[in-house]
Image (cartoon, rainbow, N blue to C red):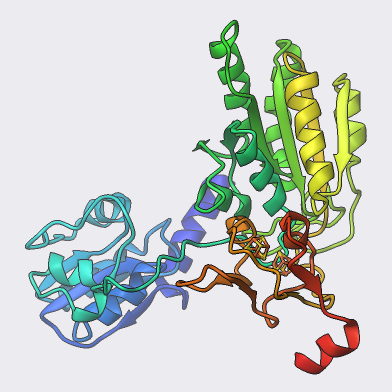
Length: 386
Ligand code: SF4
Ligand code: SF4
């Protein structure tokens, strides 16, 4: 049955619209898939392209026909040779690039042009005076203060896969390692074992609700079973935000967006026999700080789980009146260290300012200003400005 389905899929791959040929010139033909296609079209506007929307099973006959219509056939892919090997295995001759494509990093039109022996385009050069803006958590993101507080206690943070992995980047810079889904919990277990008996920084795992449901739960069971220690923070933002707000076992919606059973996260944790389990509002800076302090100091040597629960800002687009910086700013830089995209500072004076259009009124930054310089706009005035 399975083999019959694969055979049917092979046939369908030959005719389906997802595998599309774009004929331009006959000299160069490129086979590519996914985002690489955009870069190929930009870098090689005269090349014919076979864009694969289905990379397994490959459309062998379509590939052979395409190869026969061009003088030289190349395969362009990012950080891998999977497609190159698979296309070559169909029996067509795949040409080598004049200069190799890098095996790591992101693909770009410039890199493709270099691989084909052309000049790297001027637009790929970044001028020196462009300010560095690493990707950031959204304005009002419920994960932000957890990372801010983790950086304050200088924890060894084992991270996981999700939008919260952005907590690794400046200015929060509070994730030390990230491997694959569910590994945050296993790694913190391992760090605790390896560092046992030494004076060490607190070890804290950070994992989202969706990833926890996917594979963090089994890692936590292993930690409990082996009498492991450390702190596990579950960032429950009620969705799978990074990949498009899909459902997960802990928010009561299926992948098809149908209503389903919602697993009781707190109940699941308690049923595992973990004694130190707490539920915390991640927008409340004092509550976040206190929960981390209790877990990493008072309960050090034990296993603690903190569930930080608040919906992702992309789920609820309700905007409260925005915050603004009044005349009391002392340029201390604390609010900008939160990395909220709505907050910036004057390059010369260091005086902070808040972009009313980006601010969603989460009140996180105001809790960090020791000078009372961040205030919320009265609702009526905020509406008038926006
Ligand atoms: S925390 Fe307050 S004083 Fe410090 S830069 Fe921000 S607004 Fe100014
Ligand atoms: S209140 Fe502060 S932290 Fe929240 S979105 Fe506005 S500027 Fe950002």
